[in-house]
Image 1 (cartoon, rainbow, N blue to C red):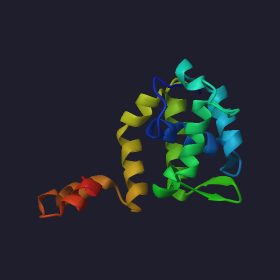
Image 2: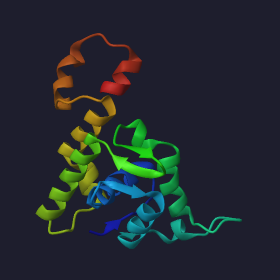
Image 3: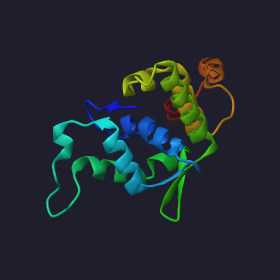
Length: 156
């Protein structure tokens, strides 16, 4: 699978990162191996390959590292870091399975946008974020209730 990044950001890195962790035998990967997998299986804009000042890595690898160091996957219940290895959670495994199935269905031509715009993917991401084990569309039933603005931002 080749991922084509028009722009690299946390949101666009989540699906491909989960996919490559999922493809590992134990669903565990190091940050450096994840960067290598993403780089070897992605089309990355030239602007992301600029080497950072006083560093050996480029902007792209730093963004992948930030995905881990800022705990984006952990905060969304998709993976956790243990002994410098990234391990998928049960939610991450469900999403990995779904992306893998999308790949097979689309003859290995699934784009990042197709993944992000896929309703089931969105539902699985929301389930993970909210730490729930039921379809998130059931939350639509509560839209008519009086909710705080803070809770509305999380749920709706």
